[in-house]
Length: 315
Ligand SMILES: [Zn+2]
Image 1 (cartoon, helix red, strand yellow):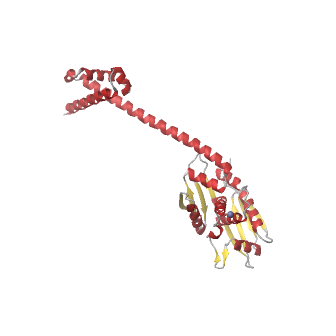
Image 2: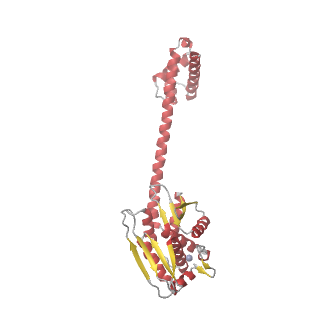
Image 3: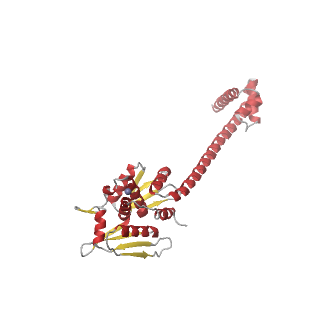
């Protein structure tokens, strides 16, 4: 079974993006996530982009080819993993050329000051582009847990500047973002189920959202049932403990010779408690033919007397 992240990425890789502004924004973010840039001997730039997801590799390649003006040469290398649990890696190599220089200039990766490491405010003036940019970030370096486990969505990148750009953007949308570092990666994460749903919806993962939401609902119902059961069990335990204590107290009281003079009403209440140890307060009230508060009052009185008796015996 593919991981949930893979399912999300496979769906997003087929998201039909048609606006030119958003195509640039998504590609910029994809490239920022996990690529290196190469400078050829002739001072032209090339791109090495790497991903574990075949669909993401195809989408990135299609974007690069679609947005480059002029001839470019690309190659796709698949690095097969020798380890069983590890995924293959797909590496797109875009051979250095003037067309790649122009593409990177268009995206403002290169400007007059040199290389821009991760500030893409130029590409992010429109709402649609912000969404596309976050989609690119998820495709390039995102992961999300299936909701049966803990809620966790993260974007991780080795590019510090870029992680700051993402943080600004996520804050603009009021996502509750945490951050941490793992090895050489800067990780931004979201742990609230509602926020994860909004994020996935924003970047266009509609189909997997259905699965996410239904699983989340199931999980919440299960948690609620567990909470109720635990609460009921705790209450029941308390009732039983109280009843055991009361019965013992009543027995002590009635067994003591000094208590022979106990008023009839109290004596009757004590005997009833002993006879019906599992009865609730209202059941005792019914048996005794008095009100609930009356029973409560008598039991308190009896317990107080039992306590005094215990103290007398100790002293
Ligand atoms: Zn746009």
